[in-house]
Image 1: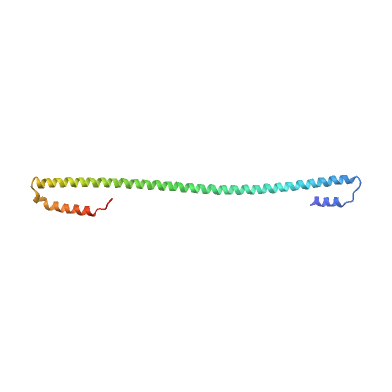
Image 2 (image 1 turned 180 degrees about the horizontal axis):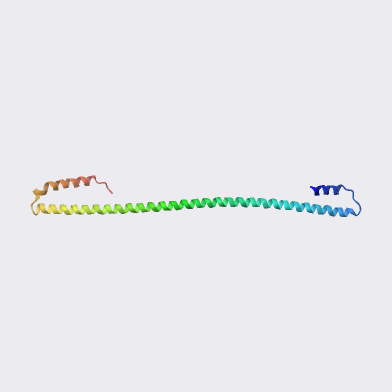
Length: 151
């Protein structure tokens, strides 16, 4: 403000013959000084805007980092759940195989028992002793065979 007032005072003052050149030099210097001052203000404003933009970018990057970390945690959690589910399915499959093997073993044992009973019925002629339990066993096996669920 002082410079502007001084510059206006210099422009309004009457000029002396030798002072005219000096006055022109002072006015030119004053204009250059004002231009330099304006350039400094513009540079300062640009630097402040750049700093604000930088802080905004850093804030956005921090938010993205937090989001990536949360996502990574969720993915690790899903991986653990999938691994647990896979282990449960393997255990279920193992149990099913054991049950299937036990079922085939029981069928084989029943067939061997049935053949032994038939041997004693026809070869040894003891049919009257075990005829009733054998018929009962055959009926039970037939009922179980009809009612079984297909796998």
